[in-house]
Length: 380
Image 1: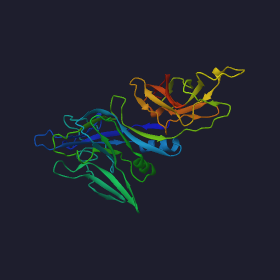
Image 2 (image 1 turned 180 degrees about the horizontal axis):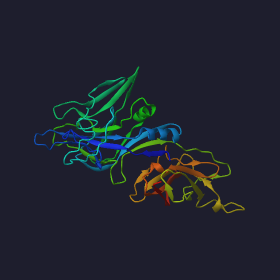
Image 3 (image 1 turned 90 degrees about the vertical axis):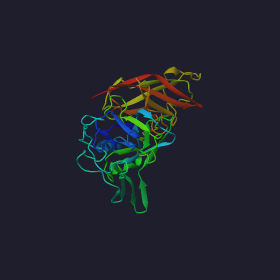
Image 4 (image 1 turned 120 degrees about the vertical axis):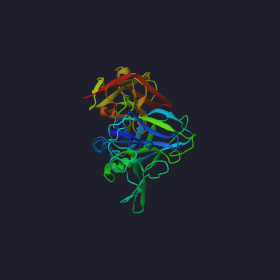
């Protein structure tokens, strides 16, 4: 599978109204700007998410072939107050932080991990203020009008000679748009992979406009499932690359019509999470041309067309795409035996059933084949 998913090893949210509160094991990560206090001071929430450097390097070194890109995804639980063109920004965190063991509004408040004022605990250390570190420029919140200094600190950009690399990525939301976070993380992950930047994870926040805004008509809230969720929607870091190859043999014809029978082979149905499986496809036209032959046309193998055949993976219970059809990253390959594609099972949530779909573009038609191609991933 050329869409490989990594899951966080820690995340938490920071709340300006409760500057020493840790929420490291809360099932929800929050972004918000609320103005419900008696003194009308806005209350801001931001989110921190971190992925393991060794897992990132192992994926790129031992699974990826060729060039790759990366995306950070987080799945929405609830959303409210989202006006037109509400912007969320994502930055690389510049300082190591402790997840802690708190949840939102514990009584008493838990202070043993990252919070608004500190990356370590409510009583230990502070976030870096805006400044520089070598070639990197650092930013943080240090306006005492509404909250203490803090809210995380992050790398804005780096300058080497005449080259400036900017790290901010932005996603725009509107009242009726999809609220899942899905941003390009390639530049930052390249920095982590090369060792140029320490991997302290991502900081996610609203853009400066909505944050610390005292307008009671502007109170956006986005709540995302955290790594501690009891659902199947933890945050993900995707590593994506094109792993397709086209090495056919002249003895096998290419399917040239959209009406076809496609059977999924090499599918025992249950896979351990550390498995890598090559699914082969037995293909033949539904209505083969009439020719004189000494063997049945209905048993002759065919290839799916090169560059226009793709696979996708759905969660069987929710019917949602886990890996969607992609012109670059889910192309189907071919070798001397048949068409095929590979899936790394530990890029999928274990103890779930999945369904494979095949999309073929041929003769001007796009056809999706859904013939109960099921399998399950189990813990190894």
